[in-house]
Length: 366
Ligand SMILES: Cc1ncc(COP(=O)(O)O)c(C=O)c1O
Image (cartoon, rainbow, N blue to C red; front, top):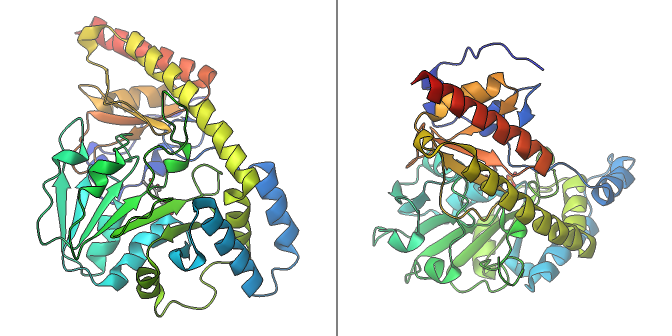
């Protein structure tokens, strides 16, 4: 495999709207995108079984099945569920709450800020310093909507739920983006989703979830939001008919049902093992003076690393056949940060060898 020299200017990596998918160029081994391979066969079969019926609009039964499955998966009632065209739509519908002041805990996924600003909401970045503990967040007192990712993209930090709950105030809603929560595990007990608030749904909390990452369905657009029934009513007021298609509803019912649960549970264990392998090999990879650091304690299916010149390492890896995500455009991070998706041990070993090669080559030059 070979790719030419990148024609992208360094400035492009700082553009706020730049999406990580463009780091996964055709021909590169993809460590940039956070979506697992998929969809798994049980989802693909469920989708295929509906293709011939696509002349019809989605039925009430399709919607009810998806709602019931989501509610059952988290021990909620159906009036606490809003089905979404991907977690990304969840940030868009928040504008219907007409927040006075939105606080965004960052570094984090940039989409909430983009869509809420576009909707005219006043937004304030509450930028955490490494190791990015949410307990350090200085949220403005008048913020009536606070958005935090758990685990956070791209830092891979999993915040204790008590620290998230401490952000609540009277008249404020705390939105937790749990797009990657289904692959989190307690490292000691192996218990799944140790910090998720989906099953508790305490007062003042909205949880946004995705099925696109774990089940390899980013192209389908499907997710959901959990909140108190009166909040769900406000979020869905004026929503169009058939917001989700039959295939998205079918995928939701399959992914959060018992087969999907088992699939995600097995994947979570494998990802945890593969992540340990990746982190240990990265830590062993470079001479200490090369300054490669695996940041914080990664708990999501990706790892954030810091090197003195991240963009140079990214380009050097690119010419060796690997695509990694530059974090230059995340508020609170910068060009020294790169995000690596957790992949199979053999792929990770190949990436780490390439990192080592770059660091040694650079070390010899200096
Ligand atoms: C942290 C986080 N939340 C939400 C999303 C959006 O997920 P979905 O594909 O379900 O819209 C992404 C996608 O990159 C993400 O990284």
